[in-house]
Image (tube, rainbow, N blue to C red):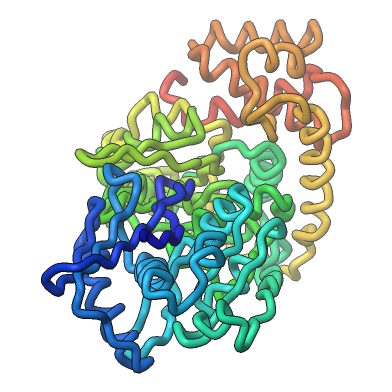
Length: 504
């Protein structure tokens, strides 16, 4: 008779249910695992054998066959150890077959029978909830999985505890969710002296999830400003927090099962590879753009990134998702992020500084910023020049607005957008509006339309640029609480669009 246990295989952030079948039959002693396992899964038989030996359980001198169905789905990772062990124990009638069949299990076994934490517990809990099953996972993963309220999570520390739980000898209590991590309040915009235009651009970008490009000489404060963006962004909604945490769970980034309601802020180095930025590598793991989902992707020294890496950002920026295509798999990850890029105006960095005049004006700037293609630059909604701060200003006391005050305005604008797009699937911010919906919510008044038409004709704005100006104008109006987009809103949006454009 065949005993059955269940586990999951990961397909992007989705967890697909896998049936682990175990048959113990007469024949030459053997322990075989079939069903398209990778090397880590194939080695599970040695870990399972050693763990059972540590529990004084001897395998019978029979043929043991483990089949993982569907057989054409690649099985990757060490989390298959626990379901294989449970299916085998059920086949040997050491634990009840029916009880095992009602669970989804994942966990890596150590040689002494302990359970080692694995990645992806949160998506697995979602799959268990959808199939109305109990989740069995290592103790170190219980707090993470317990964030899914619709599933009962049992988190034993060892295989022995798991056996005792199934046999009713020592029933384990369901795991409890981890702690909500506190917001980092150490970086405040009030610490930034001057740069009022850049601060205003940050506020607009945060309010509508618009992409922002900052350019300025070295030391002007581009990185300092960008690092303070998380302090003005609203907390993740419960649905956003769960979706973002599922991606981080697959990457092993959740700290002790704690859920972070603060929006992610990722800042990869310019030497990062394409697989690190977009996703890929072994198992087609999520890249930085997916880890920044619902948050901020900050790319400092933007022109220094390889051209191929920069060009791969164009499609994810538009669609909000990325498909990692490999010979044996096509994995889709969400990546709705706010891109903030920073760059020097030229290679030496002092193109516009009269005190340190660049010797290669204007070729130095054209060559350097020319590494950013026109189509990619066209996707930035706001472009801001960050001038150097005078030494006399550095001695002045910090009297700017605190991040908390700006965050309240941003949160108010986000609330307006949440209400506006409540019945629009896939839309949460003004950056998502397009087509007829954009025309409906962001059509300016007569004077505003005339100004926008004049600018489009004079500076040759692309259709994408035209629509992005409308989105930014809608966000500016939301920050004021204005129901309609008027000429001043359009004028301010245009002022950010024309800065650094290649059409000017």
